[in-house]
Image 1 (cartoon, one colour):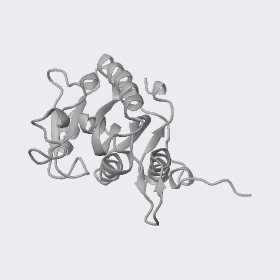
Image 2 (tube, helix red, strand yellow; image 1 turned 135 degrees about the vertical axis):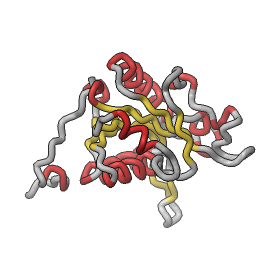
Image 3 (cartoon, one colour; image 1 turned 90 degrees about the vertical axis):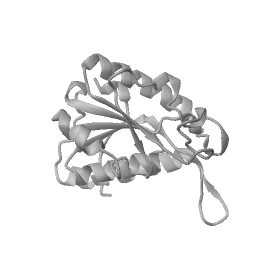
Image 4 (spheres, helix red, strand yellow; image 1 turned 180 degrees about the vertical axis):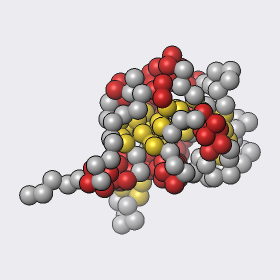
Length: 198
């Protein structure tokens, strides 16, 4: 039986993890909206804890750090003027760490994220955040088109249960795994152990 391989493996691409000191860290939509209410993610707290460890290491390494926050309508989901739209306290930006607000899943669409990343002179971008199948995925796909080499820390991302279109539900863990497998085929290197990003 043939062992399945990604397109990146078939192309003999370099799948080594980047050094934090050679990369930019982009934290996507790590907002309170995902902790309670209709968008609460089952694995949000674990992902936040892992992202906090990675963020601390990135800060110590001197890596450029960019926080992305989804901006919704006043009074609605992701209201940036309300607590629900705030970045979770464990990952609050420090002075000098830019916050890029977006209105679409792809963090590059309608924002200056591309210009900010390009200004660092680094091609390696590490993505973490919410939700794996939505904003992390669309940002990773766009980043490839823009010439970046993308790595995703699997344990610093999470998503939610989704309807399967047949009256059932696909568990969040399965949605997360499938999203990462799809991205690993061509769009990103998946770090299964965030501690390996050093």
